[in-house]
Length: 74
Image 1 (cartoon, rainbow, N blue to C red):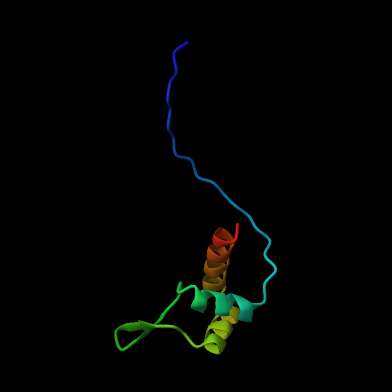
Image 2 (image 1 turned 60 degrees about the vertical axis):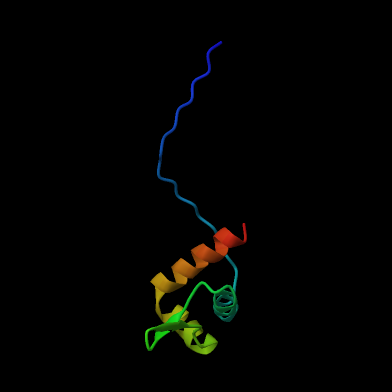
C-alpha cells in the first residue's frame, strides 16, 4: 500500500488556567531572563517590585508573561 505525506499549517488556540501570584511571576520572569528593562541602550533585569506593578496595570504584559510561563511549565 502506498504511503503519502501531507503537511499543513493551521491556527490553534490554547487555553490554560494558571494560579500564580504576580510577585512569583515577576521573580520567575527575571530569573528566567525573559524580560529586560532598557537603560542607557542596555538591557538590564527589571526591579521585581516595579515589574509586579507593571503586571498589575498592563494586561498585555501580564498575558504575555503568563503565556511564556505556561509554555515553559507544561
